[in-house]
Image 1 (tube, helix red, strand yellow):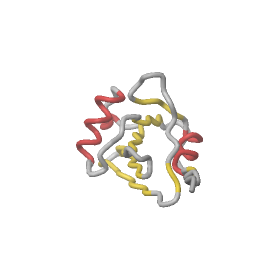
Image 2 (cartoon, one colour):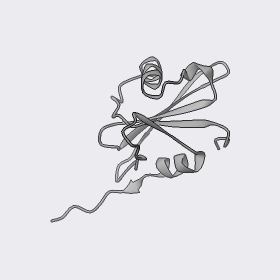
Image 3 (tube, rainbow, N blue to C red):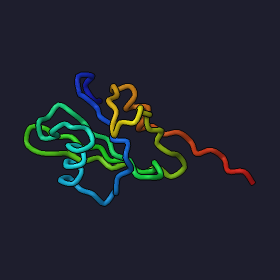
Length: 107
């Protein structure tokens, strides 16, 4: 799937999912401090409810955007000590993409 050498950054601030390539790249620069166009990194953005996720990465000739929406689950974002982003490995990314079932609401 994704090579282990790829650097994966999860932006912890909620993201407006209407953002496209350019605005997400700008958010990656400000939140992570990395230039996404440089390649070799994948950036993860989630909405406030953690039910929608976008992944942004650049390859040789352009940029790619993956959008995933969950219906009966949420994405469990990693925590950070006050930072705007956190770096994770590809195993943690796979767990993040799988999501976790929503807790049953009390009746």
